Image 1 (cartoon, rainbow, N blue to C red):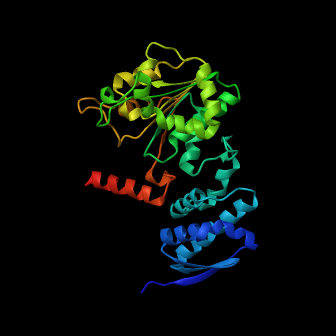
Image 2: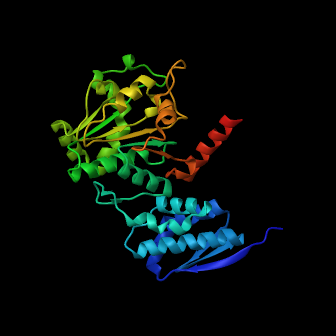
Image 3: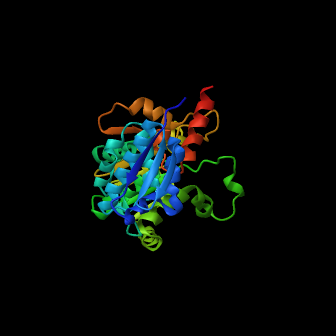
Length: 319
């Protein structure tokens, strides 16, 4: 018979109940993640379940309350991050993630890392000329890369941003899409536009695009160039060929920095082509000025079911 215990977590005041979420959504999320029962009563919540799980949820609520008191708004993403770190035995480091603000987004909200994987990613970018971020979608690779690029531009550390990705046809044919070349290619670059709009706002982004301060283009447009004083991001790098990857990496100029992001489980290249990202990590991983960060499913900062889907597919692949 499984042993259960009941523990009450008391808030400092009724206003702190905001950490419970709208209609107690955050509490319900924790209850599901840790398989316990939660019963909120005004300024307290009763937790019932396995002793270790109950203790973890109480600790999570304490950390969330501390962040709230330090002026940080608590959202569901924060609760998910805390739960993931608690399950990995790393909850003691949770509050440390909020010590640094990378940049303030277009709505005035601070952009911070959400987990230790993201913190390692940011630190690697700061200390390397080229950084590879490899791992599943939803880990924040593109968004954080764009945030770091915009921050560098605002500090005048670089003069321009160059954002690119290969236009690989994943089951569709560019030739059958309507419009000119830009209109055909733009859908492939949409995640980059979305990140820029979120961080800088649509109007400001479009002004910088018109002035050439920000350039968003397919990878093929990088050939033959030397990119000086630029922050360059290659997204969806798993879909580069070996030749394309070498071409891109050798575009690095003086006072420039590169980030290469990709997910090796999402390669859409023809079967006879080998991913340039796969080759690059084999050849370059131990070079001193190049950093690699390997994201895991536990680093996914989306609805918890997304991480479960990634894990399920990974397990199926191993079978």
